[in-house]
Image: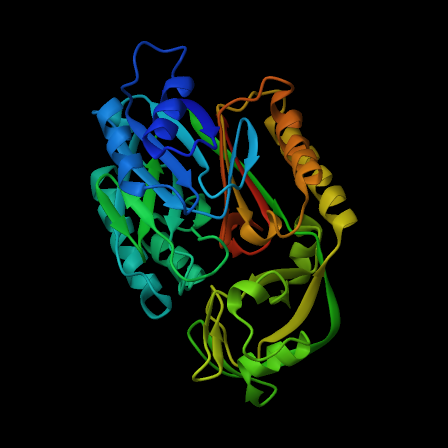
Length: 399
């Protein structure tokens, strides 16, 4: 049976930060060696020092991680330039496995994810859930999910999301032991037969204005909207200069497309959202994190703070009901980067994190690992689905 432990901090010294997280996570255990370390870090840390310290303190452990715009741990949300959160796993090596591939991009997301999934299945055919950490820049995440499903089947629960930077959308990193990737896809397969994952997502945005139509697209790249070059069209809709940098527009440049009617009640919304993850200003086009067909209709969307809080309450009621009195063994958490410092002040962010953690754990918060990334992977209508601008929770509990 797998056991989970976690800690987070905002220490400036990277080695000390990792040492503190591992030591405090395992303070109830005998020593600091373990079997798996999963970490999220903001962009200011010295990444090599983080992984070296982890491997020094836990020589038996596989070490995986990614960058993000902020972390969430038992201690709450942290978004300083050097913030670190760690989830430590102890248990039989037969109950987890890790596989990864490099150079995942929009045009090859299916093939790269399929290859990683095949490697994962060869390592452990008993995997019963998969945690994905992948690049958030130029990826067709829906194709990646289908690639994993081609190996494990559509019934395999997949959760996690895509890494990010400090909301500049320039570069992000993924880590596997001593290897640092920029366009990587890491699959963490759990194979504990006593464990199941409960999950849900909520975004809290509403559509505004009339929809517009994609008139030229290829894979996850949109060239034209309503017959006009896509990036200038979107900037005009947002009343922003066409030379606006993506990092400055990302919080506002979010678009939604209509969900099938059958999913409206479950999602607590009629639309699913996507953010712009890359811009090619020379060709006046932009990329979204899923494949897009010509004829797709999008709406601009706007945050509704009351809906964010009320929707999160409804999501937590749903998840606590599904737990039916069970205490989570661990919670993984992926939040959109734009829902971090770009949305909430310190008090409100603390409140929204409390509204997630306390219904699950009460005052004694258990193992928790979250990040503010560029996208979230969460079941919707029983299907593995990629989302943007959501709070997505993945509760690991006794089955």
